[in-house]
Structure formats: C-alpha cells, structure tokens
Length: 123
Image (cartoon, rainbow, N blue to C red; front, side):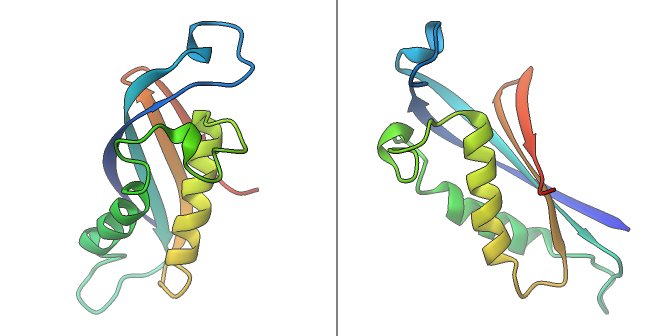
C-alpha cells in the first residue's frame, strides 16, 4: 500500500459559536491542511498518484476559505467552523474530486497551529 500526501495552507478567521473561552471571539489562523491518499499499485510511470494533481485539487477547495471569515462561508454559516468540521468538509469535497482517480482518500488533517491539529477519516 502506498500513501501519498500533500499539504497546502490558507489564512482565515473564525469564531467558535457557543465555546466558553477565548476561541469564541473572532481570531485567525494560518491553517495547514494535509491530504493523504492511498493506492495499492503504481501506474506505468511508477507513481501512485501525481503530487501535482493532488495539490491542485486541494488548493482549489481551499481557495473558497482563504482570506475569509469562515463563519460566513457555507456550510459554516450554519455549522460551527471548528477544525473538526473544516476537516470533514474538506474531506467530503476532495473525495468527490477524486471519484474517478485510481486512489482512495485516506485522511485530511487541519492544523490550527504547529502543535494543534485534527485528523479526519471516514469510518
């Protein structure tokens, strides 16, 4: 089994509704997002999946969040923009983009800081 990972980042602000603490107030992060896919075999060029393609798909998804107040971006105008919800949302969007690809989406990580992150996978 091969695992292929790429990372990208976006800058945005959010406020956690109903949270009792500092994070209930408007604040920002440079979010780092890591997407990981798995493949059981290599293609004719010896690749499990092209880094460039995976990076482009992830970047396109993150562009809608970059330099925004995430609480105003659907579906986060209705659900809390926690890292957990952001990771699950990115996962769902990326899974659709990879539907025809010869890989399976394994995990999406969303890092709020160098020491704090969430990992989402189905199941």
